[in-house]
Length: 390
Image: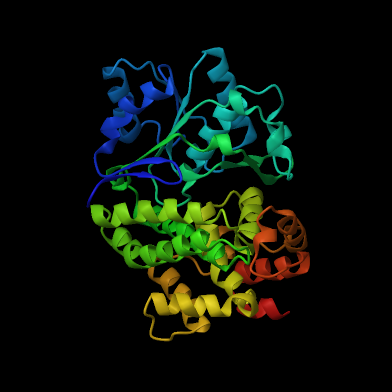
């Protein structure tokens, strides 16, 4: 697969083997003593240990911080920021999936601020309380193809006390450099490849269906959807296929770039379910997706029909596209219902209310209220589309 240097929406060094360039990108950013942030499961694997050895051999004094959970918590971020400050580290290398990337960006932001983490979360003006000059530089190294957090200006962090996911956002949180090396994703298991890959597709579909006017984001979203449809089944079946891995990494970054336009009810419900039941975000999105599309059909039918045309589906219609999503989930062995993740319906009404308050809701394809989102959750929990009509 051809390598390349891209400069949208930030500097991206794309191609197999480009992790070797990690030490070289730090100097221009003034990073000589970085904090390498990753998650608990990745810390002892060769992906991270080899990167640390690469930095050490180049004379870079890197420190590992891996106390990051699958759904990163405020405590994870606060502890990382404290470590960074105490050791006077001068930047962050965020390496891993969306959890590590989000945590790394939040740590780089929080370390130089005077306030508490949640002072900068949610709310239209929360970002204005952040001292932009105090945000430390971040180099992002994604090891999964899903969230696209490497090209995002936000971090989704779990507030354990409130049992909700909160979004911390600032333009200065955008990583300065991304090393997008598909070779780093080769060892990803088939199930995680599927879950994260569907996440990239959900980002692109919800962005495309959002009613906001952003033609550039729409174009990127459509191509991301095409890439995922073409290459995700290949990557799941043959994890060593570099072309498939590379196209999925590109699609993930494209999906995250596109959702500047907005997200929607699938993310609203998934954020709440993830916070309450600690489910994998991409897997949760994959289960909720076809039900969200069905509920939003009156507002996005023409767009879904266009996607069916782009993918050259046998039935070129909105229904044909939704049927394709159901078939894709089955092909990738995605469970048909949230119930199979241990999610019950006992808190359905509460979930509807919390999802309505989620920052993704205003971007939905059509206006929804808490009752609509409760019905969406019930349908995804049971796997029964009839719940959308109850």
